[in-house]
Image (cartoon, rainbow, N blue to C red; front, side):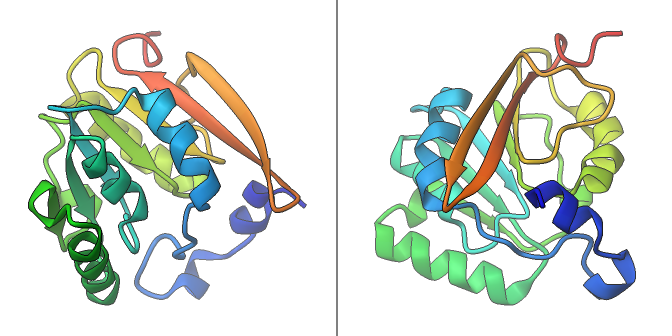
Length: 174
């Protein structure tokens, strides 16, 4: 079974008050995410549903101002500790809110490892708030109605993982 199929089969009622179960991005994929998103100094990087902060922390290590957006307080605390341990706490902004309530208008890059139905619910917000040229990278779950400008497949721990790169103003053109 694919990763997408496994998570798509989880009824929302089993997820409690959260729309997405926390499944960390595999560390082996993070360099590919950074390369694909062209993360570097001076960029504003948003990780929606950042979990323990591992992806946002890597963006901060590469010089970006990283916004770690997470609704769960326990995971925000893990991200805070990890950012301090990594020596990048001054470049990681921890936002303990629903990603639906966070303004993304200054984002250069948005990373999402969410379910397809959550990506679909976020799509109008991304179209409304992201400026043309902003990059969106998703793991395993595409944004319905958008056309990726690049797709990469990687096998990690015996499972195929798919990275999708979208560019606002290109991928969402109709």
